[in-house]
Image 1 (cartoon, one colour):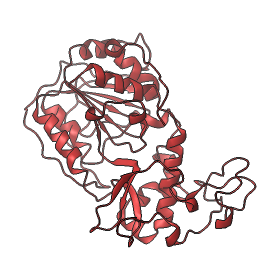
Image 2 (cartoon, helix red, strand yellow):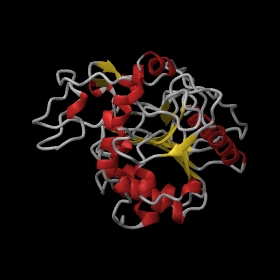
Image 3 (cartoon, one colour):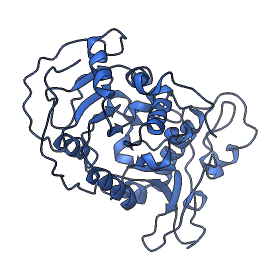
Image 4 (tube, one colour):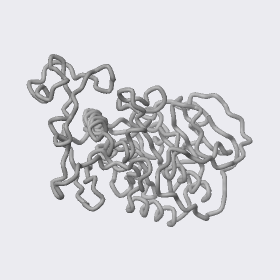
Length: 350
């Protein structure tokens, strides 16, 4: 879909971002006068794609704001809508400091499962396309809300990748007075978090991690029985030896990483943005959603790639916006083709 009009222009003043996540969000109010036109944005001959290609060719400063939909083509659950439950729990309810303090075993089960699935997955063509865009366009920045590590494994230049919500593959001490932090790619991180297989009793610790045979049990299904895990069998901080390790992700109510926020603000301060691509995210949770408004205020046009055509960007549609409905793994490489050429799907990093 394309909302025909001349490119939007606006003030170059910046919005000061909020630095904590909130389950609630505010809408910015913009008027939209264009007509919503149904069209398959992934079709090569589509006029909207041609117009996007023409505009992209003149862009010097581009942002990609990505979410879980970017990795959906890699087989990772988005935990949105009908898929938003994990063992009958709302996934968002497990992503809070309070949930971890109340039931660290349950929260570690959830994140250990996600780590395991992410390590089994491969980056898709969209991950590689964005990584190649970063190499070819110095003014490109990727603001990622994903914690799965797939962009890094697609060899995305690190200085052009801002991990807004941290990563599954970092752990840190849960204590506020201990600053222990480290990368960790061990799966499972402790034996008690191993995923049971067919032919073994999943309700006893004794069975975990021994003589694996058959298919992994889908522990995301609440009907699959799993063992209770004692606190002493969960990941422990090796430095203070008093508290648990926790996943190195940003939970609701927590501040985004200070250095990441500084990098984002520095990018906006360096000049106007030509284009912001909103990929696989509803972008309605702040402060990530605020980046769309900040980009618009410098004259940027907005391109949304999403499976849900009802996912308008925060603030709604404006003339000159694009919407391409479908799988990011198919659409993003096609949209970026004039700049990056054909995507080279190299072997994913371990």
